[in-house]
Structure formats: C-alpha cells, structure tokens
Amino acid sequence: MTVRVVVAEDQSAVRAGLVLILGSAPDIEVVGEAEDGERAVELARELRPDLVLMDVQMPRMDGVTATRQVVAEGLADVLVLTTFDLDEYVFGALRAGASGFLLKNADARELIEAVRTVARGEGLIAPAVTRRLIAEFASPAPPVRRDPAVLDGLTPREREVLSALGAGLSNAEVAARLDMAEATVKTHVSKVLGKLGLRSRVQAAVLARELDL
Image (cartoon, rainbow, N blue to C red; front, side, top):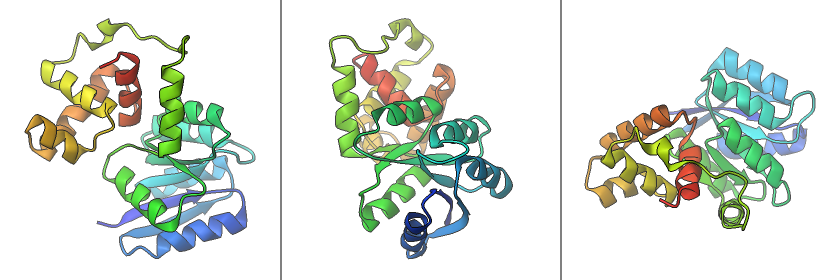
C-alpha cells in the first residue's frame, strides 16, 4: 500500500528536503505541498491524503489550528513536526488530535518510519517529547485530572487495551501481551476511542497515564 502524504512546511528549502526524503521511499508518495496551515487544510480536503506532515509554526494558520481542522473533518491523520523548545505546541497539537510527534532534527530513516507508523494507525511520539509529557504528568500539579468514572463504559478487555496504549505499545505488542489477533486489537482501539470521545491513540495513551492505568 502506498502512503499518500501532504507536506506542510513554510520554509521552502526544508519542505523540499522533506519531499525529497519521503519520495525516496517506494511506499510513500507526496501528493501535495503546502506553505501554510490554510493551504494544508485546503489540500487535505481536495486530495484526501492518508497523512499530513504538519509543521507547527506557519503563516496565515498555524499547524495546531490546521491539525484541529484536518482531524475534526476526518480528512487525514496528522504527524506533527516539532522542536525541543515548543512544548505549548506539542500539547496544543495533542489536544487537536495529532496522531504523532516527530522532532525536526530526525534523520531520514526516522522520518520515513514515522510516516509508515502513523499510516498504519499507530501513534508515535519522539522519545524526547515523551519525556516531556511524562514529566508534565508527574509534576505536583498536573494540568488535568480525569475522573476514573470516564472508564465506566469500557469492558475489562478495552481497559486492558487502554492500559497497553498508555505503556506506548504498538498494535503488534498489544496483541502479544493480551494474546489476541492484531486485527482484534485495532477493533478494540477504535471502540475505546469512540467510547471515550478521543481523536487519536496518542490522546488515549495520555488519558491512560493521567488515570495511572
């Protein structure tokens, strides 16, 4: 299966480099390029790609707002490009429903694998971003504390799947841990997201951490 990607990045040289890297992979096709968030949303509506590779700092419309629109309309999955010092954008994109976060200094192999991972329906967070998220949730006054009652509608199996997502496991790893088929895991993940009103498995993983599952 070929993964169809729209690349949204305002710096033309950086955008060209991303397109070149992704185009080198036989299973990835760049179908559109956007220089700002508004154009990214327009192309997502027009082309219906599998994934939008989204920078966060762009003119006219920032990447977080664009991510929110793309996800809300069900146009594509979003893989956000971020940097070490932009925590507010990471949390904003997470709330907006981004499926993955990759640091801009990732090498070509990491970029290609990140696109493939998100396209498979699995969340991805760069290790450095993960450390910041964990530190945030481990702080004395975390920004959000969820009521455990939000899980009341989940079956015991769905709770186990949510807990596994909180541990950062892939679908294959969840399948191995819970002794079920990978296709069954995908079904459970979809049900968990639907019941909890979440937009991505990354949001599910954060919720699991907030509830100490």
